[in-house]
Length: 260
Ligand SMILES: [Fe+2]
Ligand SMILES: [Fe+2]
Image 1 (cartoon, rainbow, N blue to C red):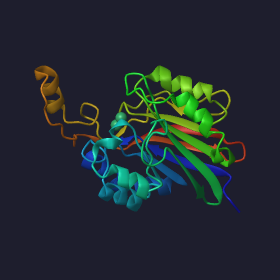
Image 2 (tube, rainbow, N blue to C red; image 1 turned 90 degrees about the vertical axis):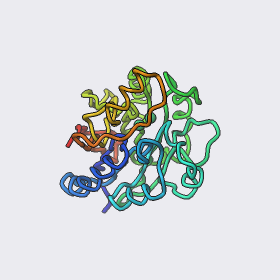
Image 3 (spheres, rainbow, N blue to C red; image 1 turned 180 degrees about the vertical axis):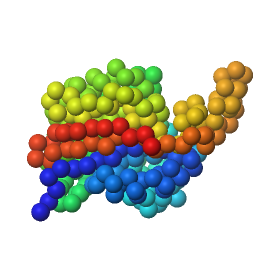
Image 4 (spheres, protein in one colour; image 1 turned 60 degrees about the horizontal axis):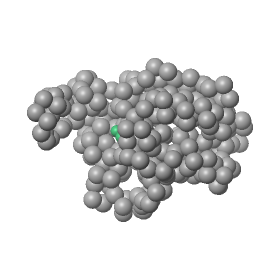
């Protein structure tokens, strides 16, 4: 018998070694305790804040991550084009006009077909293709046959995140924002059944400036020079959400924040 309800764990941007260590330490137990069927993690900051390496990808798999989403920092490592081609579960935002790899994943979870889409915002970010139009088009492809559709919307501006979620309310199962590295307290189910949170937060040292050691960031702001940043190791957390999706209706039935 196949799955009736899908329990999804989505993790906010994983920041360098401290974030990866949090995942190793806490993810396996959390998966077991919450009976998680699918884990999606944002990996754009895995490589000490900038991009992702093949070794990082292998660590994600070892910990039980099924799909790695990303955002603006995905392009930071030299080997990224090859990695996006080699690993179909590594996504870049679908609305980049010309890029390697793919912005969505379709897979089977315990007999049920699930779709994950990665998109990026355009406000205070790179002016790539319109995420609204791209999502509309993607939902007319094979993704329409999926029993749950989950979106990681990597964006700066809450207005844009809420607008996309409301515009597609009832057409997608879940939309979670990433990129700000600050977890918001607005998780909810929208009127037509889409689960929503403005930002998942981050995994790594939260006693920091969005995951990076405070001193370096302050110095850069004061001097306006190039100062190397290092991921913070202070007060490490694993942050994200756990949501349940009814795979018959494709709607979210619950959503709760995780910050452990
Ligand atoms: Fe990030
Ligand atoms: Fe980002």
